[in-house]
Structures are given as structure tokens and as C-alpha cells.
Image 1 (cartoon, rainbow, N blue to C red):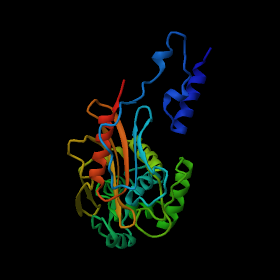
Image 2 (cartoon, one colour; image 1 turned 90 degrees about the vertical axis):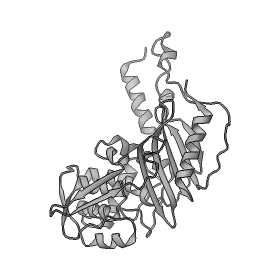
Image 3 (cartoon, rainbow, N blue to C red; image 1 turned 90 degrees about the horizontal axis):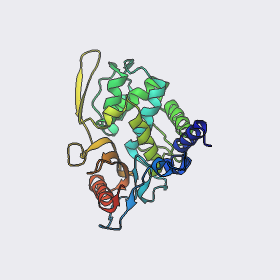
Image 4 (cartoon, rainbow, N blue to C red; image 1 turned 180 degrees about the vertical axis):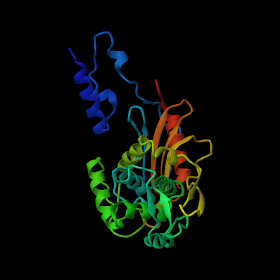
Length: 297
């Protein structure tokens, strides 16, 4: 007879290994309930459209069962640009769990402003962890991310060491960062499979999740200076319902995008696009492929 202990242990093992639940849970609780206990898997019905992507890597999966629906070079290491901020914000949450904490905007934020996306944070003023997290994720502001990293560990290099340790402890074994932002410089890489894990962990955090689908935001320093910003995710507000999303771009990484969305039959799927020339079109292509090629019993 299968005990509740064995069932619980199997589920925990399944989550850690990121395997579909049906492969871990014992097949039969009782002879009459075996079929009822199995979660139905998405079924491929045959190719309806071709998948022609500019992306160098891609991955799509079913959220409920963790079934892989499409993949292309998903285990290949490559730079992911600001998708690194998913890992950085997760690490920040462990270091600065109180989102009301106030941090000083350091001189290093000025350099970050010259290197890419930013919200022109005023150096020397003070902002809350919560609003800095929002600015790091919604407009992908490098100056906000650097402020968090230095506020948490004293320097960006010390934060990178911590973030790499955090990654390893959370099963991101093919991810390495050299800074908090994903900007070029130093050895850093990840894979579509590891980005999948990052996005899933970020979506599960109630302090991070709202920022992953927010189109606009605002940060006001303790001194009264306000910065407003908009999301870099152009799919927000379109026919695709975006529950979570993060963009990333550098010359070396090219265009990158990770999302969680909902199909027309209300099934949640996640998708990652890496090294693309047109990330939003590539994302639409893989989502449409899944919608047209899979059914859910």
C-alpha cells in the first residue's frame, strides 16, 4: 500500500528535478483511481506550421506538467544580457528581504547609466528596495540593479560571487554571471533551460511577480525626485496575455526574451528566446506553433 509519505516524497523529488508530476507520483493510489491520479499531458497532433526562427536558442514548456513542447539548442551556453536580472533579483531577495529598506544610490550607478538602459537615478539620493526592484525589471534599468547589488553586498563584484553561489544552490548549473546587470564584460553565460528555471523562480516570488507583467512604473527617491518608466516588453498589451516577461539585449547576446503566457484554451506555457534578431516575432512564432500543434486532454 502506498503511504502519503511516499506520495509527498515523490512530489518533492519531482519539483527538485523539474520533471512532469506524472513521472514521479506513484501510478496507482488504489486500483480504481489510477487513471484519475495521472495529470493529462499535452498531445502533439502533428505539424501545422513550420517554426522558422532567427533565434539561436529557444524553449517552450507546459507549466502544469513541465512537458517540453519545443526546443532548439536549449542546452547551449550563450550570453543572455539582461535576462541575468532575473537571477540578480532572486539573489537580492535573499539578501534584502525587507522591500521597504532604503538604499543610497552609489556613484557606480553613473557608469551603469552610460552603458545601457537606465532611469537616470540621482546619485547620492535614496530609494526603497521595492521601487529599485521594479525599476530593474520593468524598464530593465542598469543603474537600479547596480544600486541593489552594491547595497546588498558592498560591491558589484562581491554580489556577482554571491549570485553565482545562489545559482548553483538553486540548480542553475550552466549559468555564470560577471556582474549584476548582464552587461558585457567578464565571463558570463546561461542556457534556455536555466532561464526557464530563473523565470519560474521569479514568477513564484510574490514580491517579484507583479513587476514581470507591469507596463509602467514609478520610483520616487526619499528626497522627492520622481522617475517614471515603461516596460521593455512590447508584447504587453497585445493579443498575447503576458503573465510574466523579461527582456535582454546586448550586441553579443543579441535579442532575448522569456515569458509565461496563456493559450486560447487557458493553458499556461512558458517560453524562452535567446540570440534573436527579432525576439517578439520569434516569440509569437513559437507560441503559435504550440497552439496549433498541441491539444490538452
